Each structure stands twice: as structure tokens, then as C-alpha cells.
Image 1 (cartoon, rainbow, N blue to C red):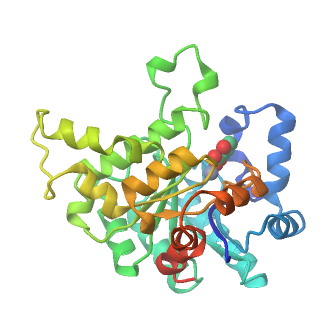
Image 2 (tube, helix red, strand yellow; image 1 turned 90 degrees about the vertical axis):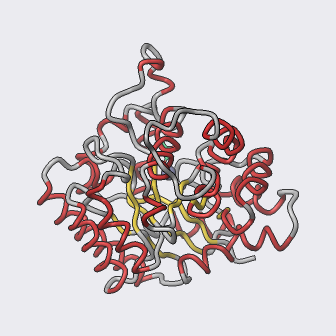
Length: 319
Ligand code: GRE
Ligand code: ZN
């Protein structure tokens, strides 16, 4: 069974200036080991993919990526350099790698321009954004230009977690909960809901937003969101579709990155449908063989397994 993984990370020595915050999430030797795997694009990676049965990794620059750069001109230049380097990596192993473009979201017009260059000239398959850009989220009106370009090019935007602007007060005194352990998932799910209620998908009904980690909890919440939307004061917010879940089911695609557990998979399939769930591992932060064994052994029908493993990725990313 062809297996394509969608949230697979790499980095470059020029990006190390941005990872100081993230590095404190793990013990130093754990982080160093992750860095060794992130910096490698062949020697460690290809044998690990072979051993686990991953045919293709769709690569994305590790969080916080370009979003952490404070200088807009530097962000633009660095995103271009990283996308060029990613395209060269793919060209050396075109059957094993594909990629999402880093976007200089510091300037939404430049982000749209770089997306177009990366897709039309470099052959990348969409964009990746790590959480907010200095406090600005993707529902901000300034980002409509990026959404417009995504739809014109018919490519998805992968929204990956990163540290929030600040840690929520409820987590004060609990740094162990800040990061991939807990806060990143909440932050990313909230970011998706900002896009729904901020009218992104009313303005761009064909936009495709992707998140990892089995949907960052969203598939579990659909009925509750719909029920409370029908009850709650709307504060002037208007949605064209009846229910919040209509947007999540139609515009959101989720990957299994970093979650190898049948209960949330069943929930995701039931809530989102088999055409909206895609395989991923979250390399190198999770174990590749664990992820492929999970996919292989999950109690789902073969049609669904093929969609998750490769069919949905082939359709959405034209692979
Ligand atoms: C992730 O992508 O899930 C991730 C990171 C950095 C540290 C841990 C982690 O990007 O799970
Ligand atoms: Zn990840």
C-alpha cells in the first residue's frame, strides 16, 4: 500500500536562530537527537522511511519556521532560500519527497507571491504556516490575499502549531503543559475556529485548510459547536452556512500526525468522513514504525485505509 506522510519536518542550519523557545520543550539530549534528524534529508531519513514503509514524506520546515522572523525583508529572503533548498532536495529524490512552501506571512502579499512561485516554479504542493505571525492570525483581513492565491492555485494550507503569543493564564505555573503536550493543540484548534467565524470560508468556499494531530481535538467538538451556535449570542458574527460543523467538514482536512490511537481515529472518520483524513507521522518527533503499524492494523475498511494512506493525498496534492 503506497503510504504518503503529510506532516514531516526538516530544518536547515540557517533556521536555528528561531528554535530557542522550542528547544526548551525537551531535555537537551532529546532535542539534539531531534535536531540531528531534522537536519538530515537522506542518510537517516530514507532508511528510516524504508524500514517503516513510508513511500513519501511531504516535507515542511520545522516550527516555528519563518513565522518567528521579526524582520519582514529577512523573512521573505529566507523563505525563498528554504523553498529553493526544499525543491533541490525533492529533485534529488522525487519519488520519496514532496513539500509545502514556507511563507513569509509577515507580509501577506509577499506570502501569496512566494506561494505562487513555490507552486508554479518549484513544484511544491501547498503552504505551511506555524500558528500566529507576531500576533496576527489567518482570519486577519490582510490574509485574504493569501487565501485567494491558495484557492486560485488549488493547493492546501497546512496550519502547524507553535508557541502562542503568550501562555494562557490557566496554564500559569505549568510549563509542562505549554507546547506539543497540550497548549499547541488548543491554540491551533482556536486558530481554525477564528478562520471559520472570521469568514475565511464564506469568502473562499473552496479553501482547503489542513491541521495535524488528528484534527487538534476539533472532530470531537462538532455537535457541541453546532448546538451552542444555535443558542449563543452571535455578537454580530454571521455565517453563510447553517452550522459551524459545515465549515469544518467541508474546508478542513486533518492528518493523523503524532496520534497513533484508534479511538480518535474512529471519531475523526465519523465526524469528518474518510475523504478528509490523511496519514502522517510528525517525523522526527514520533516513531515511524509505530505510525505505519497503526495505519496498517487500524480496524477500518480497506477503502478507507487506502484513502488515508495515499488516495486523499494524491487527490489533494496531485501526487
Ligand atoms: C511537532 O511538530 O509536533 C513538534 C515540534 C517540536 C517539538 C515537539 C513536537 O515541532 O512534537
Ligand atoms: Zn509537527
